[in-house]
Amino acid sequence: MSIRICNLPFNSSFAPQPRARISSRRSTRVFARTENDTQQQLNLSVLRFTFGIPGLDESYLPRWLGYGFGSLLLLNHFSASVPINEPQLRSEALGLSLAAFSIALPYIGKFLKGSVVEQRTLPEEGEQVFVISSNIGDSLKEDLAWATYVLLRNTSTIAVLVSIQGELCVRGYWNCPDQMSKAQLHDWFKKKVDEIGLADVKETLYFPQYEGSSASWDILPNGTRSLFVQPFVQDINEQQKMNGFLLVASTAGYAYSDKDRAWIGAMAEKFRG
Image (cartoon, rainbow, N blue to C red):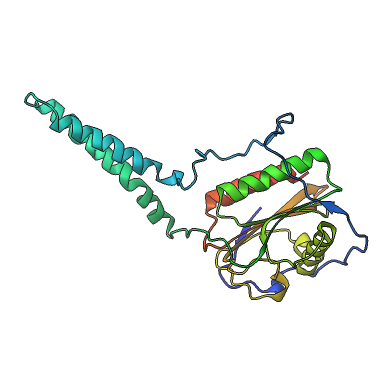
């Protein structure tokens, strides 16, 4: 499946025409998994490795290792009481060269990518919501709850929306009305999804410089700058069947690298059906 990367501001005319609105109202409720609930095990095989330390960027790990081992080499060199022979000097020079390479590695990686990924910022306006349709089974609810959690935790994402056969899971910061019940909030999101026409998108879309030029996308929080949509497409009897989509948004420009998009696509495979 090809990925369409759009560097221009998104225009709603590029999206397919919206489908007819479903008149039946779907009841919803918030599904939250408590920390003490250890009875059920999550089968989610696409989790990304992190140390889980707040404020620690694992991409800079080679730099910190280079600083550490380089400092140990220098300490060993200056604390030696006997004259240092030539083989030891060569070994120390090689070790310092490797430490210097490790320190420079994160910067080299960013240079090769061609752009520096900005850090996300939480929107000043917008509501933090977590809504899952009650028509979804308990096992799928748990998968959706943890999938949306790791997307928010391990990427620059601030808002996630997953649609599976018309049923929604919405989490993160969204520009939604106040004073709404969970059922009304679900129906409001469903109406907006139908208006935009996302359920009919068959190609992966990526907007690294999204500027929010379309009024129909007002569900996104103010300051959204990156938008990635991964559809769930099944090929059945040489025909494509739409099962839903996964949408992530970020307040950082160029928030999703090729590696991030591949990782999100692998996660979307679990909900393809």
